Image (cartoon, rainbow, N blue to C red; front, side, top):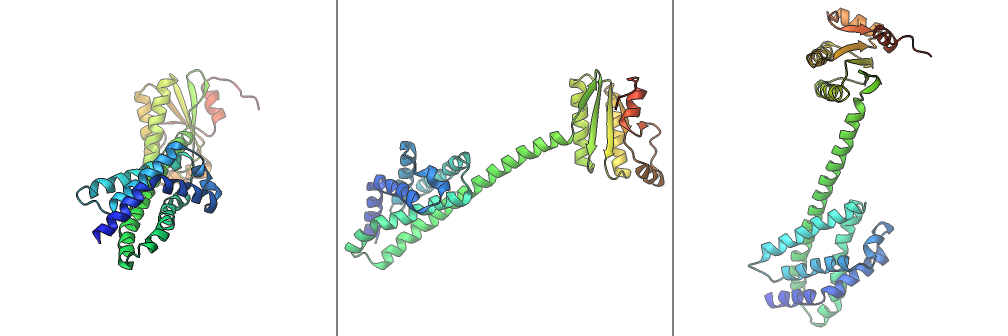
Length: 282
């Protein structure tokens, strides 16, 4: 049995270039347009595919170095994922690419295996070795795609966070920070960090925080606003709150919230008039 596995493994390794070329032909004929990029003539891609086939062949008979061969195969999967994500190829298409190696290997060797009259148990043993390894490669690729997608989501979320807390300069030393949506502990921390960073960068004397886009101000939100105002004050920046709607003000009163220590105005225009910037033309 071992001799037969070694024969098959050696044959796979000896014909790795032919199989690699067959994989490219298979992609070109059978798989969807998204994978056409993987069938383009490319010496590096050809060598990359041949490397996988060489290690698949070695896997059939190596004993002492089996772990090293398996790691080479998993490393191949990671590199394949890096390549396909860079080329914007979907995970589904990439897994089809990996699966094509199984199809091509069996197609290339079917005739010869029949001629040598290998026992069915030998074919089963070959399948038991190759198939699980290709599945592990697919899992490795899937894991790399998850890491890549998480990285892209983190970048997108970070960009969204920056957009959700914009500090807009309107006069020298004066800027507006419009807040839209809910304020939770995390976002309040983000608002404070952004206000302090931009306040220092823009050399602000006054920051107008407009909360007209905040639907509800309860005790927790009020505490967060108080903390932001106090922290800005310690940094030498005066904070003014605008946009507290009448219904929100009534809710705040009913909750016993006191904004007397904070300068507030119903809208941005009143705040700017207070700061002495004159009447704003419509």
